[in-house]
Length: 304
Image 1 (cartoon, rainbow, N blue to C red):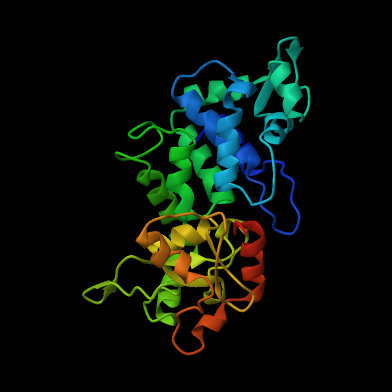
Image 2 (cartoon, rainbow, N blue to C red):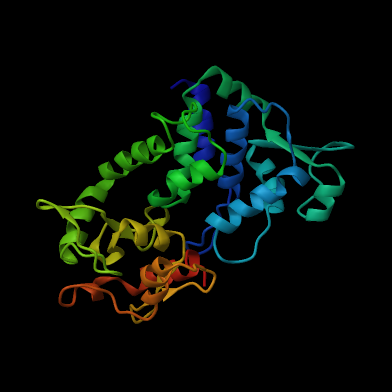
């Protein structure tokens, strides 16, 4: 990786973000992922706020914290990182963070010219930048969903394979080198190979299948690779836990977000009926989940 590419990787790694006590603020990462996808698809024109506002709002609603927020914040504030430029109908610079002002001024944003030049010169740079954004701001179970939702096309230049799974696989392998693999073995053993929410215990021979070790406090936000920060969950409930549909009460009972809706029998039995249940776990293993990690998940992920 040359000096120019290294510069941009470092810049993406050190985004200036509002932060307090581990609170999530994925506004800038989501805007950058969206803008990079548009750039890679050949969209050379800038992104007019009034035209992309609904897309950005949807991304924040799906992958951001439960608190109210607006895409106007990253659209304006990303300029301070040197990665983004904004122009209005009257000249350079953003009119601020008021949505109405951004719409009425014709504000349009674009990746900084030097960044666009670097991306064109190094085809691998975009993959590194997306990797940095995903690893530093999101849970691994959400990588594929985020890649798809931000507009990356299957088989495009980002992925190694025929769909977005390539990204999740590559980044997942990187996390395994940081100890996630050993954590998975310990967590699945602690819960006797059963989903802590539904009790699913699938195996192929002696190997668990469809079961994963979920971080309660995400690895990207200093969540340790430790049993006290882990739950053995089936693939469905892991994804729903990381999306904030499912959570835990201080007493370690399952809670279901009132924002979740499903009319089918499967939605009722696999999600809604979980509300109020205690965790499945042999002996006292379920009590190993640390209260501090549960509190973080409740505040930063759960859609309550």
